[in-house]
Length: 447
Ligand code: SF4
Image 1: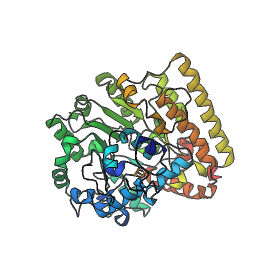
Image 2: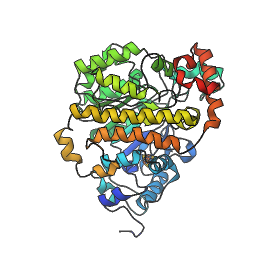
Image 3: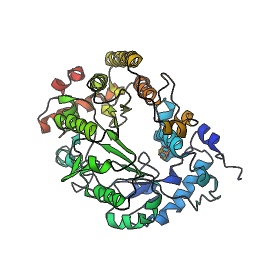
Image 4: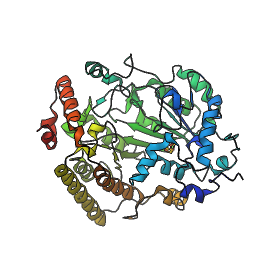
C-alpha cells in the first residue's frame, strides 16, 4: 500500500473529506462533448478529462488527466474541479460526493484499491452514464439559459446572451459513433441518467432506450431529470416502456404550481403536468417519482404550499419531494433577498416543517422496501443527514428545507437586486408576462 494513499477501506471513504468514487464508475459527457468527472465539475476543454469528439472513450478512461485526478482523490486531497461539492458540504447541504460514495463506494471499493501508483485502473469501467446529448428543450425556464435550452435561443439573442451560434447545440457530434464505442460497456451498465435540455424529446434518448429494450437490459436503473411536460416521444408512450424496467426514477423539475409555475418554466402547461402525474399513478404506479424543485427567489414563497397541496391531493407521498437550492444565476439566489423577506422565508419554512412533523403523526411515510433497507442499512451515515424523523427521504427533505435558511443567511447579496429586476423586466417584455403581478411577494424588489 502506498503511504500517500488515504482511501483504503469503506470507513476511510465514509470519513473522507475529498474522495469521490466517480472517476472509477462514472462517465459524464457534457453538452460541449468534453468528458468531465461529473456534471458539477468544469466542462471547459482545459479542465476536462478528454473530448469524445476527438478521442475514443477507451483512451480517455485511463488517460493522463483522469489518472492524475484519481491519484489526488486516493490521497483524499481536495481538487479544484470538485469545489461545488465541498462548498455544499461546508454549509451543511447534501453533496453529490456523499451520495455517489454512498451508492457505489461499497460495491466498487475493489476498483479503487487496485488502482496503481500512477492512477491506472485496469478493471474499472463506466457503469453509470450521464451523457448530455444536446440542449434541445421545449421550455425556456427563467433560471436556465440557451446553454441548456434551445427554446431560449430567440430571447437570448434579444438580450445578447446566446451561448452558441446555433439554436441546437450537440455534445457528441456523432452520437452513433459514441454508442459504438460504448457498446462494450453496455452489458455492465448499471445506471443511466438522462438530463437535458429535455431528454424525453430527444431522438437519441429514445434510441438508447430502445437498445436496452432490444438487449433486454431491464435491470439498468433509469434516472431522469425531466421537466415532466411530456411522457410521450412522438406516438410512443414512455410510461409503457418504463414499466418494463425494474427501477425507474423520475425526478420532475417542477418549481411551482399554476401561473407561477408557468412563468418560471415558460412553455409549460400546468394542466399537462397534472394529467401526466395522474396518468403515471394509474398506468405505472411502480415508477419512483420525486419532485425536485430548484429553490430560488421566484418560488421560495410558495414552494411549501405547493408541496402541501400535492400531498393533500394525493399526487405524491409526503417524502416524494426533495428541493435543492439554486446557486446560479446569482440574481435568483436566496441570498439577494432583503432582511425582512429573509425573515418571512424563515417563517414559511419553519411552519412547513412543523406541518410535516404533525402530518406524519397520522400519515407516516411508507417504509423503504425491504431489499433497500438490507442493502443500505450500514451505509446511511455516508449521506450525512441529520436524523429527525427516522425516515431517510423525509429527513433529507427536512434537512434541505432547513438548509435553505442556513444558506440564505450566510451572505447578504442584496446588491444583486438590480440585476434581478433588469432581467425580469427584459423577459417580461419579451414574453408578455408580469413577474410583479404573478409573484407579488417580489414586487418590493422594484421599490
Ligand atoms: S466530488 Fe462532487 S463534483 Fe467532484 S466528481 Fe464527485 S460528485 Fe462530482
